[in-house]
Length: 559
Image 1 (cartoon, rainbow, N blue to C red):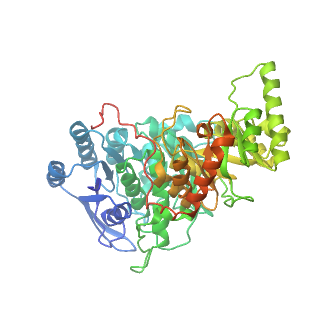
Image 2 (image 1 turned 90 degrees about the vertical axis):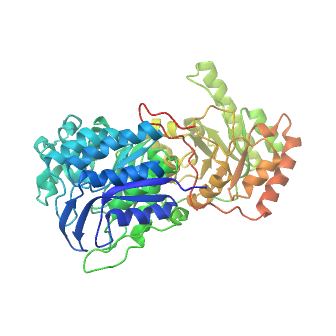
Image 3 (image 1 turned 180 degrees about the vertical axis):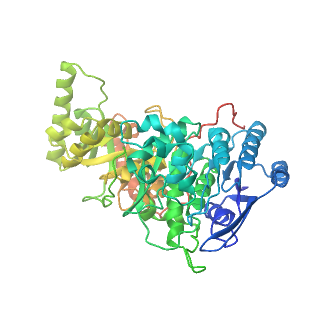
């Protein structure tokens, strides 16, 4: 299979640390083919940039035209472009690519200044970014100061009432980019980042991730604002002096993930993992900061799975929860206390009571309470675990073992509700269908994380593609030590066997239970045991996308 093609339109780095050199390493870690398009040449070493020379537009055009004829991209990443003319020229090329080749993602890494303080952008260049390139961006990945400069006065309404300093967010932000302390208040405040990201999206970027790798603190925090999710993307800060090329690695990793078909929120999760892995493998190459080194295999390390917060409150990184007691094994999901008793009689010892109600009246509420109470009693008498779907207040009141919640339900609880739930002592099961949902789930330290749907399911309407066995195996490896359960589309004992071979703590059974669990459960139990004894399915180096990536306005998908 041909590797997806990514173009990086960026600057050279004579020290081999940042720019196209870093982009090439990141692309290799993702298994995509990167075409390095030179937009500017820099003279630099590990300590300083001594000269920047943008390429003439005709030479930039020649490179792009040659590639377009033979190697059209699925994603384009921009780095150092060198000037307003180059920024506007690249924007026109993005339109040409999308008109000709359809879905072409664009990651804009607005390289406006070097960490040493050298400025790469003047007022005209900033205006070109705002007016021409950001409105075409699938994702933009500025650091904090770059976000302030790019958002400009557009950020002021969102910051109103937050003691912001409007003058600091003005369109003449070059002094900070030249190493002068013009914007310290706004650029260093965590509470400003959500507003800045909102302003960048209002300016046309489909998604924004403001990176915080240059900040202090025990956590490396990036603020994500995308179609599917927003929140802090957090990992422990890696103590290393070798950070050259970190921003380039993050942006080109996100571009590689978009080229592989991931939505922006999932691409940011993978970019966070790849960048942390690259920092761990940074090395000295001169007297100053050495380059980071992205490598294959980064996505197989569970310690690199970030936490994604539910809100703008600074996240904490909880200890990952290991299995509490025995495996979940066959996990029956039923809709009545009577069915609970029947699956218990058949030998199942993990049960979820899923009774869907919407704004029940008083009679419905009494009936629901009676069903939950009866199920709790039946499971307690059988020495089984009962998870109550959705109705967590009843689960607390009636002392069920746990509760299972979807991510929309957890988001709706708000910070106070989630704190109350965590303090209740209930074992928590959480649904996850994509990488950003997995990142949210691990931050809750749940008793288990459900991965699904493994196969197509008609139990409920879902926007997600089936995960498949490879993704299930990857979930089990990367969520560790938090247990994973497989759910969705399991209609035969053979599927229970195949799912069990991927290493989950339990396999959810719903329709496959049939009318008589005493008949179906023995075969399902035998299939589970067979899968447990089979050779463990190896997790892939990268998962497969489970959400279809939306296309830019006016772009048609290719057949």
